[in-house]
Image 1 (tube, rainbow, N blue to C red):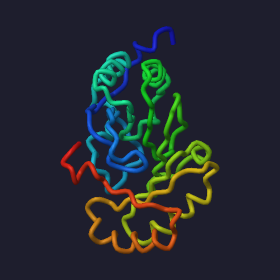
Image 2 (spheres, one colour; image 1 turned 90 degrees about the vertical axis):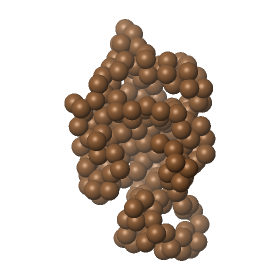
Image 3 (spheres, rainbow, N blue to C red; image 1 turned 90 degrees about the horizontal axis):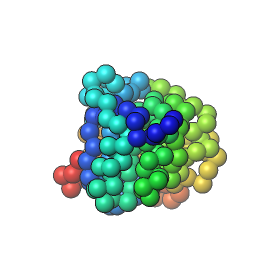
Image 4 (cartoon, helix red, strand yellow; image 1 turned 120 degrees about the vertical axis):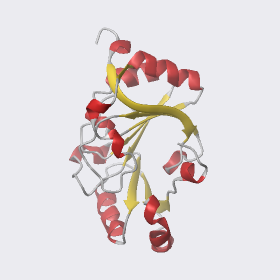
Amino acid sequence: MANWRDQGYPVMERFLTVQGEGAYTGAAAWFIRLGGCDVGCAFCDVKESWDVNAHPLVLAGNLVDEAVASKAPICVITGGEPAMHDLRALTDGLKAAGLHTHIETSGTHPLTGTWDWVTFSPKRFKAPLDGIYGQTDELKVIVVNRHDLVWGKEHAALLQTDARLYFQPEWDRRQKVLSYTIAFVQENPEWRISLQTHKYLGLP
């Protein structure tokens, strides 16, 4: 591409917050939530992101300028399913500006772009591609019921990287699943618990 700044992306929202999940919990971060998702998780808390045509195109140049202006050192690209899009232009701009690039993906589409941190969160609703297991920095498995603990271990066994392992209680079921998730982590200390800290703090 002659100029990365001219690539447009369907954007649902972008905002300054702190990362509430996983390895970077508590770190200031600029989030860009892209529209479009073909996974369709029943427990998704941003279903309004699913329709790619419902969100206006924003130029990569504008997105990078906003991320820089936020002064956050990390830019997290999420969705929806952000890997549906060719993210090379966006990450080219973010990297040129000195920002760390993070992506949160279900692994159902090939990754494009340059990433400092890849959070892979597999979903039962659509199988991930084999390639994601060699690109993962962090495996985050949402816990809806006890079966997800075993299912998460099955994904961990496929990893080809020294990824960090997290179980994250689904927000609306956290009171029901937290006790046995804690017990599992105590018995399997290679795993950690991820809580959606931003929701406890009242942040987006």
